[in-house]
Amino acid sequence: MGIKPNSARGADLAERVRSILASKNLTLSRVSQLSAARLGRSSPYFLPHTLYHEFRLGTFSPSLHQVFALSQISGYRFSDWLRVLGCNLEDIPRFQVLLPSKRTMLLDSSLVDDDAWIPWFRNRARGGLVPPIAPLAQLLQLVSPRRLRFLSEISNRGFLYARIGRQDALAFPDLIPGSIVRVNPRFSNGCIPKTNGATSTQIFLIEHNKGLFCCRLRVVEKGIIVPIGTLFSYAQVELRVPREARIVGVVDIEIRPMLHTDQPEVPRDLGKHWKPQLLVTHKKIGPLLRASRTKVHLSLREVARMSRTIAGLLGDDRYFVSPSSLCDYELSNTPPRHFHKAITLCSLYGLQFHTFLKGIGIVLAEAGTERILDHLVHRVLDTESIEKSDDNNIQVRNGFLEHMVERCEEIPFFLRESIVALSDLDDASLDDFFWIGGKQDVLHPCLANGLFALVNRREKRPMHFSSKPAWQQPVYVILRRDGTYLCACCGIENGSLVIHPYSQQFHRSEHLRYHHDAEVVGRIVTVARKLR
Image (cartoon, rainbow, N blue to C red; front, top):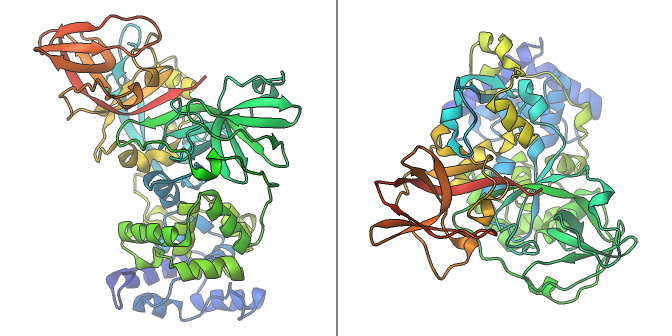
């Protein structure tokens, strides 16, 4: 697909690049001369003086090196230039969440644009205590959007995020395939048992030569750990820290999709005893790509097939990577020519974009730091008065919003484009999000230490399956006649709404008159909960 010859899109791109350079009193001819003078015409950073013409023809897209040269010469940010050229870096974490994965992978949460406009809220005026379960629309109301940089104190606290692969069932059913977990890399050594043979109560994200895995740890002796599975029979292999394994951090929050959950599996290479190898950090792009692909357990053909899916979703064939090209990248240390393919590889390999750039010799610290104006970079526009408003800063008040932020510690704004992938809801609104953080005695294990539930309010017909385990049972939000809410598994029997408790404490099954004593609000499709 790509940019069609003589298309309006190509002409618009050329005009926007001209306007951006003009804002710095630069011409394309001058930029071309500077790129040649600094690094030579044979350098991958060289920018041709025919760039506008080639944009209009749709015959050229700059490489990552050339985009870096534009950034360095103009002083504008590298990520902004990529956005101008049609590349949205936030597609990387979006595809990492959307596409199925065999092994657990780190999500690149660093790519969110800090000048993006973010929907924001304020507390609703209300009397009394916050209910233990309530729709967020009763507690918060929308206000003008905020620049993300004004919310930095709740969006950049150093947490990592990972998506559980279907072959990582070590912590199942506490964590399930497809779940997104938050990882705190600043854990204390007290989290790891000191007694030889003791197993940790907390779940850790660890890395060894087979990839990334979430599990509890058993200490054999000082510096030697064994990953422990909860239900499935993984081979117990002793790993020396830090030579053969790295403890990335403690898992403290799970965002669990409640629909289309993959059945976990124990892969053959992890079910039988295997010999650990030393952890190696690869600096060159070829070995880096090969090691990253191996850790997510993908063949060249599987990567090519999944890249075709990305190309289809973005409507651009340049995101497709053939098996032969993949082989060339790994064997010849030659980076992809188009930046589109870098986006695809980082998405499928769980490779951090800054690591990819470092592998091809680009040092982001040397790029420009100024932001390009919204109308030139295709950000959502808003008025300057909003940006300068005192309301941009979070007001310290003793309300629900502040309590919620304190409980969560950090809000993962980079996941805002992944709500559809996590819930199958195309148009989720504030009415679909429920606060469940005040309920202690829960009726389903996935609601323990819950924070939020996302509800499909169109699924009001409750179903309960006697032959399915708790982790596969649908969970619903129920509105009682007295105005209080309940989250539980339930089904209709002889005209009654029967509540089926799955809890550690004893609870009798409750029978309510359907449509009289209670109504089903909808089915919970995603849950966010703390693990400690």
